[in-house]
Length: 90
Image (cartoon, rainbow, N blue to C red):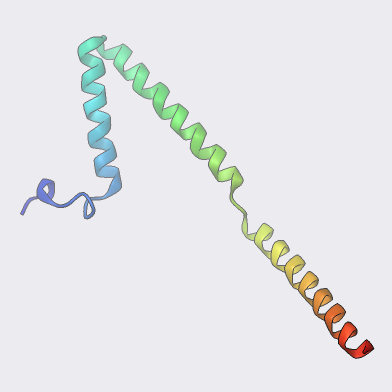
């Protein structure tokens, strides 16, 4: 069984992306010059990279997660103290 016959689930994602990029490049090259096709592909790669960077900015960093956990524990302790205080009051 050759690499091309493998299920897409077993192929590395980079392989399918490179294959797709080559197919798109060939389509653009048939419509435009080789230089124009390369420019269009480069433009789309830059746009994709910008989108990825925007998405990365949304994710929490390790420090953000630690701060979030600290606040959650603090509020949890305060809430438990309030509940216990209400039970003791009766």
